[in-house]
Image (tube, rainbow over all chains, first blue to last red; front, side):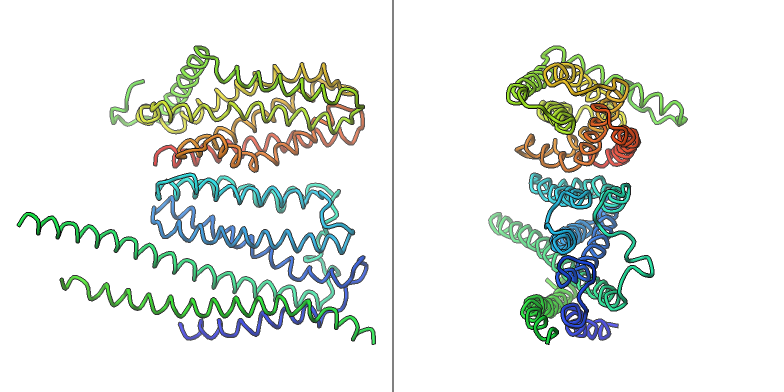
Length: 239
Length: 52
Length: 240
C-alpha cells in the first residue's frame, strides 16, 4: 500500500507537467473570445475552484470532528485544509480575473460572481484574524472550528446560489455540464487538471497534517520532559 | 507559420508554472522523506521509553 | 431562576424555562442599558453625525437612488456595529459572564442577547432613517417595501452580529477591531441584498421593485439560516 502511494507521488511530477504543457501547447486557441490565447486559462481556473471547494469541505469535516472529539490533531488538520482552501480560492480569483480579461475585456468588473468571491476571500481571511486574537490553544481551536462551521454556510451560497440566482452575470454558465459547452480537448485537459490538483492538495494536506502532529507530539514530550526534570531537581534538592 | 509564432509566445509563459511545479514537487518529496524518518524515530523512541 | 434539580423535565417545560431565561436576560440588559444609556447614546451620536456629514457633502448633487440606498445602509451598518458587540463584551469585561454561564442555558443566553440587539438595531433605524429621508430624499418612497427591507435586514444584521460578538468577546485584546474584521465579511451578502432591495423602495423602475421583493426572500432566508446556525453552534462558543 505504501509503495503504491509512493509510486503515485512520483508519477504526479510528469502528470501535472503534462497537464501544464498540454494546456499551453496542445490546446487550440479558444473561439469567440477577445483574446483567444488567454482564454485557455479556464482549464486552470475550473480545477482551482473545484479543489478549493473540496479543501473547504475537508476543513469543515475536521472542524466538526474537533468539536465532537476535542482532539487537537483535528484542529491542526482543519487549519491546514482551511489554509490550502484560501490559497486555492485566491488562485481561483486571479485566474478568473485573467479569464475575465479574455472574455469581456477587463480584469475586474464587479460582476456578481466576482463580488461574491471577494466576500468569500474576506470571510476566509477573518478566520486567521480570529485565531490570532486568542491566546489559549483550546480556545483558538474551539472558536476557529465554530467559525469554520458558521461562516462556511456562506460558501455554497456565495459560489453557487447567488451567482446563479440572476441571469445578469457575465460568467459562463453550464459549459461543464452541457454537451456543446466545451471543446473536447479543453475538457480533457480541464478534468485532468482537476485530478492533478486534487492529488497535489491531498498530498500537501497529509504532509501538513503529519508535520502538525509531529510538532504537537514534540511539544507534549517537551512539556513532560520539563515536568520530569523539574521533579528530579526538586527531589535532589530535598535530599 | 502562424503556429510557430504563437507557440514561441506561449512557451516562455508555460515554463514559469512548469518550474514552479517542479520546485514544489521536489520540496514536497523531500519533506515526505524527512517526515517519514521523524515518524519512524518517534515510534522507536516511544517503544523504547519507559525503560528509565 | 431555579437551578436544575435533576428532575426529569418535558420538552415543553424546558422550552418555557428557556424562553423565560431569555426574557430575563433581555430585561436585565435593558435595565443596565437604561441606567447608563451608553450603547444607545453612542450609536445615536454616530448615526446623527454621519447623516449630517453625508448630507452636507452631497446635498448639492443630484444622486441616483442606487447611491442613496447604499449610503443609507452604510450609515445604518456602521452605527449599529458600534453598539452590537456590547452584549457580550460587557459581560466578559465586568466578569459577570461566568455567573451567566451557570444560571442560564446557552440557547437562552443567545436568544436574550439577540432580543437586546434587535431592540438596538430598531432604535438605530428609527433614529437614522427618518432623518436620512429628510436630508437626502429619494425620488419616491414605497413605505411598505422600505419598512419590510429595514425589518428583515435588521433581523439578519442582529442575528449575525450577536453570534460574532460572542466569538470575539473572549479575545485578549483589540476586540472592537476584531469584531469589525470578522463581522463585515459575514454581513456583506446581507448588505448587498438589502441595498438592492432598498433601491426598489426608492424609485419607480418596475424591475427594481420585483428585484426588491425577491431580495426580501433572500433576507428572510439569511436571517433564518444565521439564527439557526447560531443557536446550534452557540453552545460550543459559550461553554468551552
